[in-house]
Length: 372
Ligand code: FES
Ligand SMILES: [Fe+2]
Image 1 (spheres, rainbow, N blue to C red):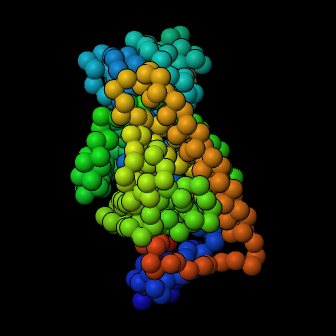
Image 2: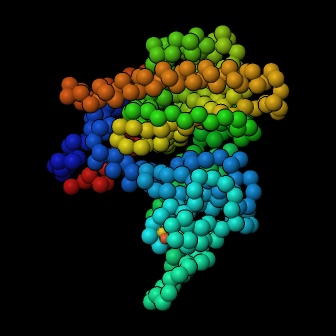
Image 3: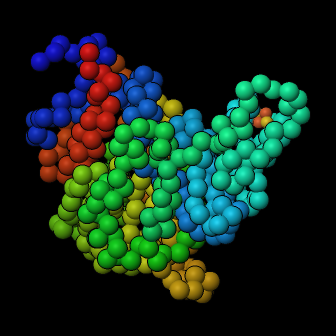
């Protein structure tokens, strides 16, 4: 075996240890900007990442934009209604071309007016005068891979640019998680509301918290704990996904009979309860900041009906209260991870299998770059 290089030992995680013997990753995973750079390159620029919803793009010309680990993107429906995603970076001097969201028949860069067709091809480059070796065809907005899955839109940033095995096979990533989710009818849910939170913690602190098999619930979420029956809590692990399922105690009508928390590596959660669903997308902003986007859906045929509206409002308020509690504990963990007193902790072998699996997948994605 080779001697670990300096960076390897600083970030090292042994994926061969069983959960009973494994320490958690070193705190550098949560605090070192170099590790964050590795994640950008090997995780967020290479995986399928959920960026939006199909209902945001109902017609040709509809578009929305965003930024994923420093990569501005635009997702749109072209003139023929095909879904497309492109790097939203002008080929002239790199300004961001499309802004916010809306409807357009072409994309005009606000800097010097270079204009692109909806398929990304350069249509106009005004006032260029005589330019040598300037082949317009080489100045299209570079495409990304884009897919729809149920109500979600996913991107693979380096998609066709990424060489062999790019984009990844989405079906094999989602794999067995599709069936239990489809049984819950998630494809027919109607989007109703979005809430965005900014957290002072590494993105993994939030993901770890959501994958802990309900470990924190009875301590951190007293009200939610009353509605759940932890005797029946179970976790199913798949290749790049997991589902945590818990029976409800019957004390909280909002939860229905069963609650399912599904996770798609690296940063997307689908939570299904009663007649509601919410998704949590965890977007890394820097090594110690992230944003969590909550989208709420309901399966009511008529969400404008008075009773449904009231139930939905109540459910969103409860979810907001739970999120406030989670923010507090995630930020508290981040503060502790920065302490000189802490490096590695341990896993509960009974409850934290998904957290352990998450760390193993992440290590598998980045370790090639650390091999001396
Ligand atoms: S940067 Fe877009 S037109 Fe100049
Ligand atoms: Fe929580």
